[in-house]
Length: 299
Image (cartoon, rainbow, N blue to C red; front, side, top):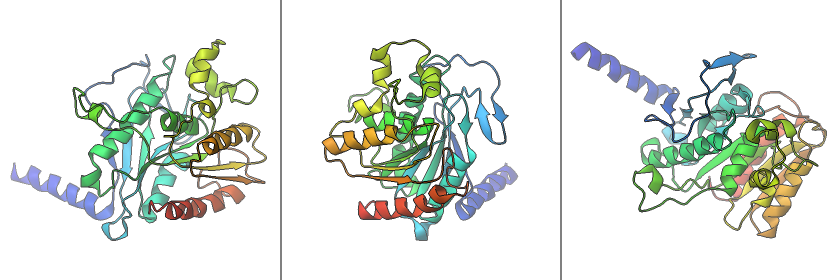
């Protein structure tokens, strides 16, 4: 018994000292919805994952003497059929950590016919961070969400459709707000309008039908309100996968409500560079984002 206690103690001490990853299940007691996936989760092309049927968060906490109190829930992209966990997930979290910002990478469940699944995971991830904010050294009013490509669509879905918590909710999480305080969107899918949207992401999330009422629910340029959080966007003019008009339309919708927003369209960069695939866009955007957070007095 004493030996087991010492092992647990030293493992915990190691985590606190070295900042090792903390992994939590998003729905430890079972999710409220199901994506029907029964095949085992598997890695694809390195650290990309598919067949995701259980959501998890991977927490990267900064050192106490460098902590700004801010945090970002990170949604990797992958067209809603895989998730690029490395350059659009873990690597972003590692960089945030060096800047005193907690990075929480979300491995969300992929939809497989249930379009409500990914966004329910992302909202719950924000609630998890708020619930643990004090313990993790996070200001519960400085919790943002980030996403790349389809992960940017997921992030912008949560940023435009959230709840502020139900004080009469049956459990603690229902009483916690799922609204992000800011958004970081990297070359995001925004619209499901056939003229400008990424049809692969649309098909994988809501199916092949032409139900515009459903597509409109996920055309996030149409869902901005006065309560949508401040947003920082990065994209490249030569992106042929998700055309720049996605971000432009979202920016214009934000400005209708005078929501603070900053958008950088780089000449070169293409799509899918994240934070570590070196090019003009990937090299420059992190510091610009950090400066933007400073300008908003989030850090």
